[in-house]
Image 1 (spheres, rainbow, N blue to C red):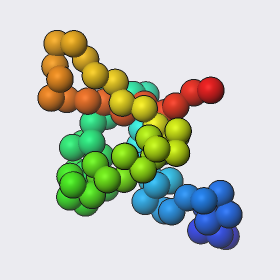
Image 2 (tube, helix red, strand yellow):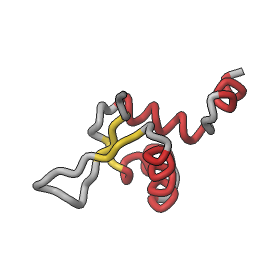
Image 3 (cartoon, rainbow, N blue to C red):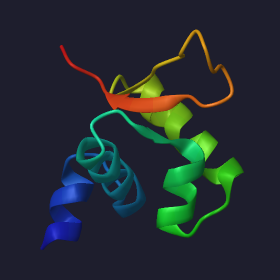
Image 4 (cartoon, rainbow, N blue to C red):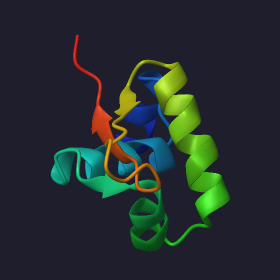
Length: 77
């Protein structure tokens, strides 16, 4: 049931899991942390986040003092 609801919304389970993690961490979770929690490699997470950014669902926050750690946030209209 949940799987079909995700599909009808155009989301995969992995996308939904990533959005949930970003929401739970309120913009303080990085791609590396998502990879660790989700048990997938960092390159896959980067591609996944790129797709979510492209769909306008997620944004990246670049801190002026640490450009190597880029937290993700849910996009807000």
